[in-house]
Image (cartoon, rainbow, N blue to C red; front, side):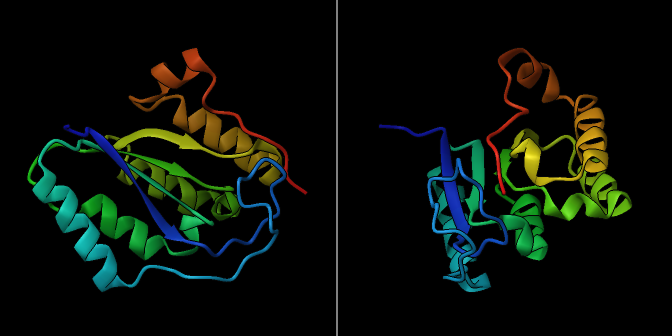
Amino acid sequence: MEFDSCGILLTENCNARCKMCCDSRGMVRGKTLSQEELDQILQNIKECGTITLVGVTGGEPMLYPELVEHILNYDFGRPMRFTIKTNGFWGKDTAKARKFLEKYKEKWKKIKYPLQVTSPLFTHLFCGYFLQLPAAKEQKSNGSLGGGTCE
């Protein structure tokens, strides 16, 4: 059997209490992959050879932007696309969020987040900006830009 996609649970840590989350324990403090553990996972993905889509999830993976960027910049030896599930807290700094989205715009397949977690300004920026990216045409047609509700 050949696989074309996989997921990485980067961290169990989260700074939100999203009702729709499969881990509804509320704010969680738990395990986060070390750089060494992450490198081993990324090497396994590279060696697999058939995987071209990697989903990054948690907890809240953007609590560790350096690890997310490490995944996005890893040399898999082939073109890769990425998804991320985030609560969007990092968008409070809209300039920083725009820079991050722009830097990796060709790599995103999907970015999923709950609309009620973020500020209206970030939601407007995020959706407005993301809809300009290559992956957005597919998401716009299937409703992937939305999410559940958070407190």
